Length: 348
Image: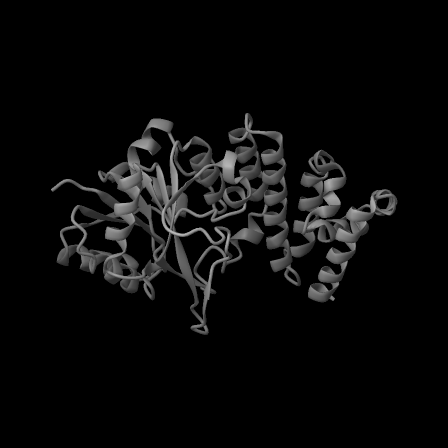
């Protein structure tokens, strides 16, 4: 049978979640489904569970690897895949229903899309509370095509993740698109290479993925983002190269997004042993990029957090920023005043 979707599931120490994930995929009656599970050297019972499922379902193929990183596990799955489309599904997530792939593939094939992106629902694994992802799509209904030139804000600040996308395998191979094998943050350059190389990106408003958050074994739930904080800067440089020829306003949006992302993890590190080092790293790296923003710096949501870092590490430079702030046009000054209120409300 022709393989139409290859589901690639990277697994590392997910014994408490992998059954729910595999049960949801195995329940699909979609014709032409291939399920590739790449175990990244798990030290728990994950590989044993994967082998159990492989013995019961001929669609499932298990690849055992030495421990490296999620990116390497995804790339190994991509090398083994034969499907028309690729879906990178995280081992602690699952499908919203048995018809998810039928609905998803139908939209992707109808548009002959390089990328077909769906919506998803977040579930807090600790509390069980349910909430939707941020609405970057707005009020548009049904499948629709999108591109950076017509929808830059939504795409650049949107779903910077691989697991809510069906991606045409030939598109990946033709463009040599793979994950950088980093300890974390590998999703970001992969995502931006997708959207800037795609000739047809389609969005559907079906919520086909259940994404679990607040999981200690996920990258966001571990200290890897703190320990390897410098990876944020390496991925930014990859993104900057990818966007070398895109319009300047989009490059500034990418710069804003990447700085904001790194400072988000710095906020999460507050009170930990990593915080001081991360602040120094953030200042030392971004100080050479901040001037590209000009006075737009004072309009960014992360502006006050960055200035707080500068005030501690470089008081004279901070004074210079304050002088610039005091001479801002009224519109910019009002924006900064609103950010100050928001900053102090959140951080005290």
